[in-house]
Image (cartoon, rainbow, N blue to C red; front, side):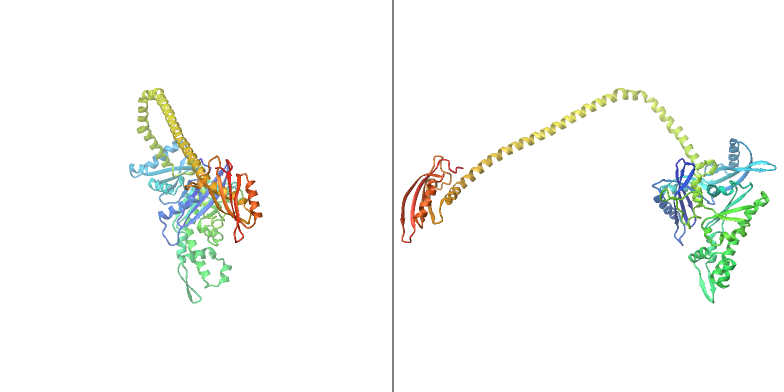
Length: 572
C-alpha cells in the first residue's frame, strides 16, 4: 500500500503499454492523465521496447510522481483459489506458509520463490461457512527483473498486482452501485480481450471466485483474416493492418447488414471468419463460466468486457449468445472516476483508449489498498529488504555501537577540551589573517597614494615649465597683434626693432620696459596722424616719439617712430 496520494498505474501488454496517472483526494479518486504507447507494428516486443515505453511514461508523468503500480498477467505467476475453514489470521498464516513450503520441490526453492495470499471472501453453504483464499506463487528473479526495469526508466515500482485483483478494483470503483443491491450469489464476469491472450475473472459481487487465462486471442483472430479472398471473380488479399481495420469497422455483421452487401462481398466473408473465430475464442470462456452452474448452482448474470479486443464491432451484440450471459457491458474506468488532465474541468477520455486502460486503472487503485487485500506481489521483496536490514543491524550496527561506546571517553575529551581550544585557535588565526589582509590592503593603498602624489608634483612642475615656455613664445605674437589693432588701413609697419631681439633673444623684455623702433609707410599724413594718436593712447606704450617722416616720389610717406613698452604690459 502506498502512502502517497498520487501513483502511475501501468499495464504492459503484448501490443501496447497503458498508463494512467491517478490521484486520491480524501475518499475519491481523480485521473490526471492517461497515455498509451503502441509498439512498432511488425517488430518483436523486446525488453528494450518496453524500456523505451516506460521511459516515455516517466518523462510524461515524472514531474508529478515517480511511483508506479504494475498489473501482471505473466504465466510465471501461478494464481490459485483454495478454500479453508474459518480461522484466525495467525493460524491462517501458519497453514498457508506450511502448504507453500510443502509444495516446493527442494528447500533451496524457498530462497528463489515468492508466495503471497489474500482472503478473497467467505462462502456460506448449507454445510457451513468457509473462506476463499487467493494465492500467488512466482519466481522472485522475474519480479526483481520488473523492479530493475522500472528503476532503469526512472520509476519506483511500489506494487505488482495480478489481473484478477486489478480488474476487481476497477469494477468496484466504477460499477459497484449497479450490483450493490443484487442478492448474492450474483456472479459478474470480467473479460479482458487482449492481443495474445484472453483473461476471465468471476466475482460474486465483490468477492473473487475465478481467474483464468486463455491463449487464443485478438492477434490470432487477426491472422486468420490475413488471406486472399475471391470477390466478383477477383482475388483480394488482406494484410494485418487491413485485418485490424476490418475488425473495428466491419466486425460481426447482423443478418440485415450482411444482406445489404451481397453473399460474395468481402465484408461478408470477413464477418463470417470473425464470427467463427470469436466462437472458437469464447468456447473456453463459456466452459469456465459454466463451472459455476454446478459448483454454486448459479449462472453468470453479467459480463464486463475491456481490452483492445473490446473494440471489435458487434462484439457486445453477439457475445451474450456465445457466453450464455444475459447482459454484456463495457468495463469503464471512468464511470465514477473523473478524467481531469488539464485542471478542475472533467473531460471524456479518448474513446479508443477507454477499454484499454481498465487494468492500468485497477493497478493504481490496488496500490491504495492494504497489501493483504490487494495481493501485492512485491511483499516478498519487502520481506527480503527487512531481512537484509536485520542482517545489517547484526553484522554492522551492533559492532559499530560497541566501537562507539569504547570511544566515548576520547570523544568527551575531544568535545569538552580539544574542540574549544581548536575553535579558539581558529578564531585567533582568523583574526590574524583578517588583520594581515587589512594591513596588506592599506599598504597597497598607501603605496598607490604616494605614487599618485609624486605623479601630481611632477605634473605640476612640468605644467609650470610648459606654461612659461608657451607664454614666452606667445608674448611677441600678442604684442604684434595688439599693434595691428592700432594701425589704420592706409598705414603699414615694415620694421619693428627692439634691443630684446638682439642675439636671437625670444624672451619677453625685462620688467622695467623696452624701447621699440617702428618703421613703416602711409599713404596720407592723416592716416599717419591717426596711427600716432592710437599709439600714444595705447596702454601698451609710453614716451612715443616721432623721429622722421618723408614723402617718396611714389607718394608714400615713410616714417620712423620710437616708444617704450610700459612696465608689466602683456607680461607672461
